[in-house]
Image (tube, rainbow, N blue to C red; front, side, top):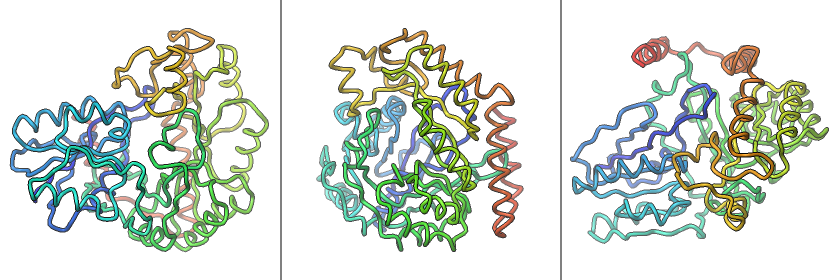
Length: 422
């Protein structure tokens, strides 16, 4: 069986430095395919899709709401040629009813434990169902095997000649039900760790020394995360993650295990936030602040004070986003009841556009404050300068422990050629 697996294009945040990381969901999907499937992967963010009528089936993996429209265009084109299309991914779970209008089959949930193989067996036997719904039936984490990174062309994921990070996950599910987040709906409210030995085996097999651990949170189980970090120390990998537990014992282990920097949500100017940043820096761990603008507590003065605060706390980097009421998030339910959703043009649900009515400012003013935040924080040299400083720090760590290597110059030349063409 010949399958084309597609990851549709999506647009980066305005003001954000444009680079592309290898997507995680498609390589996880590929690991669950039966051996008889010959899979050809296309990431439209870094390569053009080769429309080919010789495929038996097309699978489209959709992570983000803003990818949905483009995914529909791709699917419709293939279906007109008589080639069946199956959809899966986070955004598909959030937009299932709409997706069904553009799909021959929709897969909802996680693909392991033989589920995807059963779907393709149905297809071979002419019994493909319209919907396969495993949303509330999570697979045993022992069945989550190493992702198939062999489907990726790593040369395409370079920024200025350097491959950034490879994505990997050590757990699923999240016990925290944060108001802008859909994680409880998507992965369940229970923390579901993978067996640590399987995680370590996967990390060992990744050629890149720099990783992004994409777990929702590494602050859900202290003993488990400490055990994980201990096992990671001999790997000498350097890694990025979402927040880890703010416990000195955990932070020391994280640093010993190669923690490069973490994403820290910053919603206020409290001493707690300041202390967290200081503690991370004390352990040699960098901090990229993730700042959400437009919450009901924020007026214009609040946002301006927040920007001033960020300039004082020695952040390594900052990423500003506008509160976005994604389907199935707690904030979406609240705004729908209050009649505050402006529209459902999913292509604008990019976290840099105002798609709801803020409580204390106009939509236009919030958009203006978003631009002010980026321009103020990066006024002294831009995001690329601060990113360069972070990379300098990780290179110093790699040189110290003997893991630094110069990347293939062919990658650099390839990137320059691509840059010149654009």
